[in-house]
Length: 328
Image (cartoon, rainbow, N blue to C red; front, side):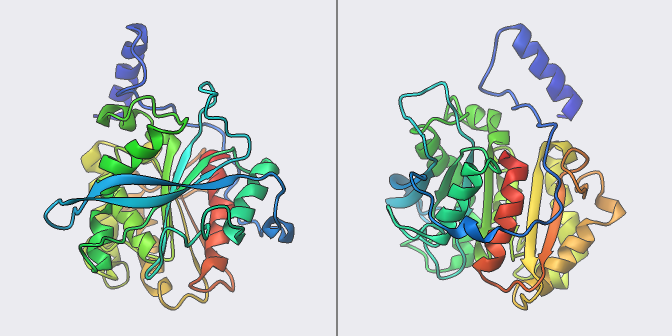
């Protein structure tokens, strides 16, 4: 369905008094400029009365194999002032996936613990750079399968079927119903990102869950849909494949956003991510990936953090610059 057709449908639904399930969240029209900004040093200092890191257990399945059920844990950052009883106040949700060998504790360390990641988010919210939002850090690790690539490939099923309903059915989010149509209706209030292996996971979520997620923040990693490292050895094919995926959903550049980046010293991910991004910038794909200095005029932006390595010094800079474009 084209964007015009969806807008006509949405208008008809409003006329009939239908809202929530099945209706696209409205596209934002005002965004901060995308130009890279360095993080103020004080943003890594603790904020008194900042947000809280909690945990949630949810039931999922072994989607890489026999679909056997088991329980997993994710960490959840709740911003300062979150009140479960205030149902009028709703929050955007950002899901963040760790890198290879990591866990759900990679960004926030653990329950009630201090971390650079939490300090950064607390300061961004306290200083008005970022709207108070909920941040969820799950893990792709699967007790039935030790193949990280396979676990990342299939994580989108866990995200859509189990994690989003568990989180957004419990907390005060824009998802008014955790049915498939309700999750789709709130897609522009939901983002997904990840680092390294988590970046590959992010591109797979983009491929399989574009109906459910509107914002993507892959850091230091390319799409592995055509094979591991295909962004490096087949950049044009990777760009073409991503465009076909978007068109298969019936979407165009106005329906999703990608803010991505890599460190200039990252010799692990850079050689694969940079060629793919350069191919995505070609004219052949401009009706799908529109690169711009402000998301008012496009939907994609790439930063190469000068001096950054394959590490969280780069992650923090991409987050600091990217998250306000989603939920600022």
